[in-house]
Image 1 (spheres, helix red, strand yellow):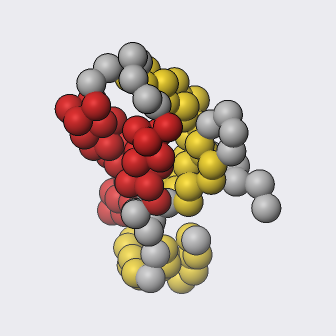
Image 2 (cartoon, helix red, strand yellow):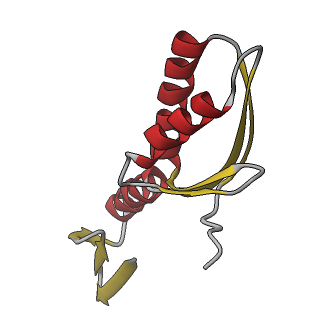
Length: 125
């Protein structure tokens, strides 16, 4: 949430439990740039992913992959018969998927992962 209060030539901006005070000049532009960077770091995302292990019993590998995703408290993981949906901070999701896919490749060999990614929190409630 971004809140602003203006006093003559000074502006106070509140975001993410921190106040920024600056003059309405180039300093103001610098502060807005920092705020934008902070907001971008917390961009939300939704991912739909399916895993297809090749040449072996696939159910244990898929269950292990999903269970490892569910261990992270920063994301929401929903499973259905066709795919798994993941919701949360973009960078957290992407780093977690990178780590878990690599671990799966190293442990279980060849697999195909199919993903759809959108930069919005689309969880159905």
